[in-house]
Image 1 (cartoon, rainbow, N blue to C red):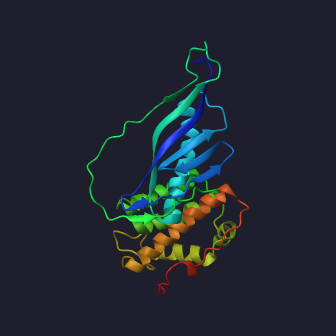
Image 2: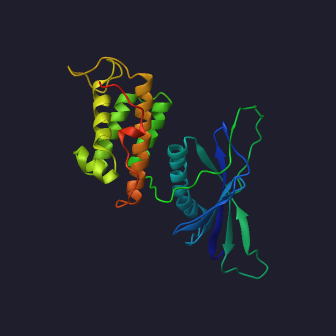
Image 3: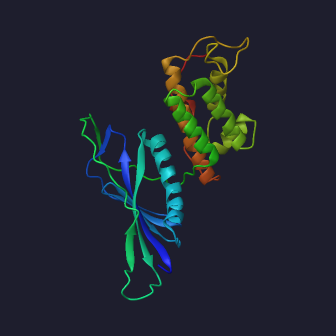
Length: 262
């Protein structure tokens, strides 16, 4: 090919074993870079920009898919991921009329697996891709750290405080009131996150240890509270990065279970 151009990229949409989609309608979206269609278990990108190589086109598409994965987990509470399948590439300047005008490249090898029966939750629709959600370096770090916690590799209290301070650092402020205003979050949410992550814990699990420490691990209800708050703040930060002047429903303590005072 003398003038290769990537027309389309196609990915298989996968989800966790407990979720299945029951004849969902197609989803069509458009960005500045491509048209996106989610249908029949696939995500197809029809490129607007010129990409001479498959790798260049994939980099642009997979930034979008990364945001789709994280947003789905935060918004809908389950995991999706994407497996690259193939690309359609054309030659915009073929050497001779006998040369093929287009070809399919990069077809992935799909390995058959033994079927293991699993109780599945049937969903009538695919998760909506985000329209205003950016995975910045900070959003990505907070999300990866949160996943490490879920897999037992990151203690909850240090994670919660780390997310709290990284959030304020990203917003260029040390004041909860300023961070809360930018994100449309109640100051009480940030202050409660700070206090509970700072003053709970045992000598092995506490973020810090001093005379204010309440020497006990978080209760089950407190663990669920931390998880809900962290997911809400990660999602909101991604929305803020996408639209710093955006307007969103305010996140308040009423969005989460009521906890007794420390």
